[in-house]
Length: 231
Image (cartoon, rainbow, N blue to C red; front, side, top):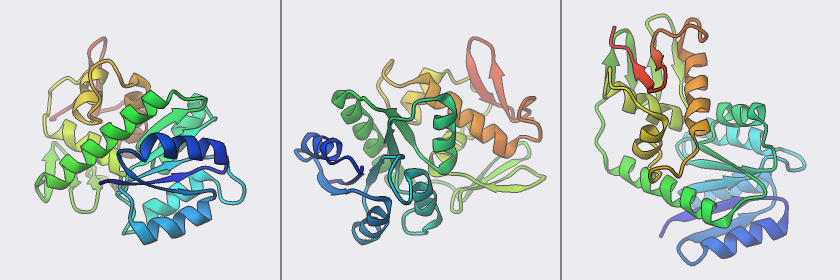
């Protein structure tokens, strides 16, 4: 049974989530980011559902702490927060989140996203990846999550790694947002948000492109999607 850590300072929200999940998962609930860091190091959860607006350490800094911890850096993190602006989502993904859901939320959508994240994590654990993969001047280290652009090395978040690895494994293929949501995030067709793909593509470009406004690695094919250029 998968272990899920729920972190929210609003007790009624946390208990609603716990009630919905506890039939299928082992659920722990804490009400602050500091408690979350302690609990996560103790139970090593399979997923963390994390609020952002909390007193003391907020969810963004907690997410960064999880990503700095060697034991926890690959644990999927789903932000569940009232902050819904595009800028907020970008900041959340830059901090290392895998997915982002805004309050008020539909519990059925939360369940769908939880199932998809856990299913993807299970597949990744079972898959045998090469030590590294290269396309053109890009080289992705599958052990360290670092990508070498030929000019610099940068560290990717787990979901950025998954996205880039999948695209580099199919160079010159054109991926629609819906196809990436199915193949990388494991969402059923027409259920995920294209914003999720756009945000992660944007953050990847910021990290690996010499000029993110004029990309040379991750190209946009108008009305079709994205591709990794092999040259």
